[in-house]
Length: 207
Image (cartoon, rainbow, N blue to C red):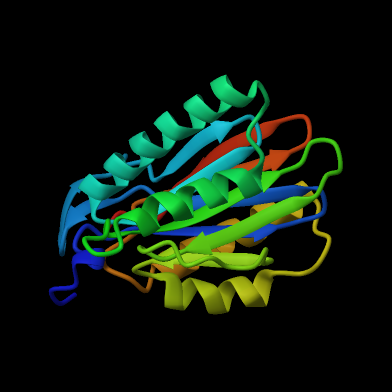
């Protein structure tokens, strides 16, 4: 695994779009290089009814950035008296990361969301200094991302319904983490729709 600080604790996350639904998934492993410490470490955080962020990288920075972002989103909703939108959340996160560009947080992030009025879906990714991306169909970050991205492109098709989206996301993630020793031990998949959020836990290889 080498000495790369971003892969020190392992972990991977994947986001994918469907028709009026969007999915985000992550593995559950927390480790120190090749040693597994825990198998229930969450990397996905909810910031409003339809906005979620997944962080991968150094575990301490995952927790720090998620808490600081939660503080800013709470403050935004208090000041503006309106619900957070995915684009606003993404801009808030990239600003937070870019502020620390000379001593950066060691996290990569995925932001997903859905507009409950129009049904428009959003998938963004960012590196550890807040580089902005376009609204894409598929994004992945973490130690197994190079394996999962190819699988994600294979399973992705336009205008999937929520069940098809769940299946595509699950298969891409589970088959990808099987090829990576720094991630795995099951997964959690969130499927976000206009009227509900469905959370499913998947069993994976326990090695």
